[in-house]
Image (cartoon, rainbow, N blue to C red):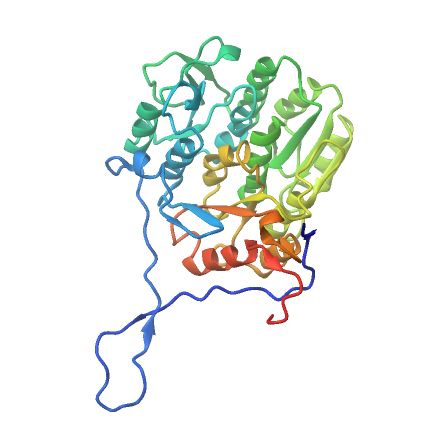
Length: 397
């Protein structure tokens, strides 16, 4: 049986896509015609007919990646919900669904804790006072049965969203701090006891906050918000209900100041997890482990989720992928959809390897959230190659 190894210092693998040649050849014999890069494919939008149903299946997959390729977070949320809950029978339907305004990324990220156990409610997104077609399609297909831990509620209305006509429970707050605290209370009620850890993120730093959604969905650890220079009273009160918990702050000084860290330190043991860019911070959080808290993804054999930091609600849309299946942390591509060098290096660090038989190895898999404008086809091909299990002693490399 081959040993499972993590190839260190291996060269980055590159998967080259064939370019589409221009029609015809020049008469001057000056070589092949110039090729053109493929036009990025635009995914289904929130208002497209049957958008939610279409996105229940991958729009483009490689051997190690699957893309949920909506053109907006509304469509992606509908697609992810149906990928995780195919709704082919009672056991593959979620107990409940959380409805959140698409434009309110703070509420969406905080509500990601409801994706985890015991509530198990995927997020679907509203658009003002309307439910977009993608959301309607997904609700019709999912047919939530009702949550036993929330009094049979089928729909959890988070903030100001349109009524669905189903059995509902509402969560409200006058600002992001109170709303996140209210979400924490309903999650605590469902669980039967407060969590021993909380995450705190900057209310004005969405890219640094995005990775919290995946971990909230996986672990049931709530996400609370702070202003950069002052800890809001609602957040402090919410933390106190957890009885001096471990407090993990995601974000550097630009998101959460040292003054707030000091204020949090009076409420519990406080640790900052951050780096100088959102992409590097997401990697730092993916690597981090502290007792029972953290992903601790420093070796092969994991799921990963990739999103673009310009679309913060996509982190919440993708949260169900981190609460089931391969349970992966969220990583961030560059704002232009390309793959940053630091992400390449991290994927190399956790790339699976084998020295005898790949069948006996472990595997990584990546979920990509958004169409090719948000994560380029080139980035997808590079991610696919970097996730591939590879021979450790490959002389050809």
